[in-house]
Amino acid sequence: MRRSHPDIAEVRITEQEIAERVRTLGEEISRDYEGKDLVLVGILKGATLFLADLVRHIDIPLSFDFVAIGSYGADTRTSGVVRILKDLDEPVESRHVLVIEDVMDTGMTLRLSYLMDNLRSRRAASVRVCTLLDKPSRRKTDAAADYRGFVVDEEYVVGYGLDYGGRYRSLPYIGVLKPEIYGGG
Ligand code: IMP
Ligand code: MG
Image 1 (cartoon, protein in one colour):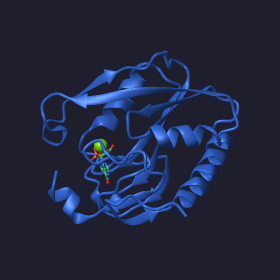
Image 2: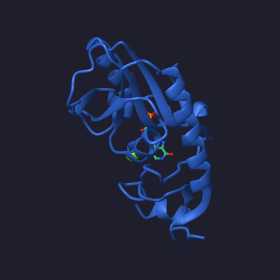
Image 3: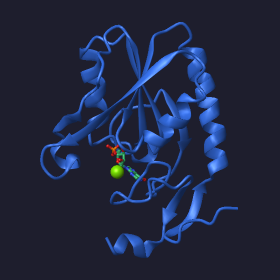
Image 4: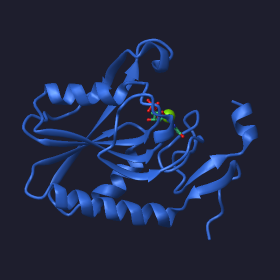
């Protein structure tokens, strides 16, 4: 058994639980997009591990691409002004786009809805969202996921792509940090 990271207080979703859920999601997506021209669009950087595992369980032809989204000014939560920092490499016109997100939280950063609108304006055949984690209790908009890995409660989690200050993305499980880590910045 692999030791957990010394900064982790508790593991919330184990490596095995993630693997099983990702396999099931891959099977669902394979069924739903059978015969369609599918492109997965991962949002950097949080969705990278999820996307990498998910594509290995989708047994229909697909391609994938990445976008990075940022904001003007310091805080997306207040400014709500979003921009694309790294755009797609290939056009999505007439293709079925599945956006891969790490966690849907308040929905207030607007980055998801901005990206969805942007992709639709490029005449994608369809645009849907698959999020690893969903925190519906925190939602302040009517944004909803088409596919979701796990519903979690409000607490802040790290691992499997999710960071705190750029750290902990590489952990193979999802867990909560010890309280003193947040205090220390
Ligand atoms: P939203 O705009 O409030 O939905 O925020 C979503 C973004 O906030 C995610 O894509 C993450 O980058 C970040 N985020 C929200 N909750 C967590 C968490 O529990 N752990 C790590 N990042 C989070
Ligand atoms: Mg983050």
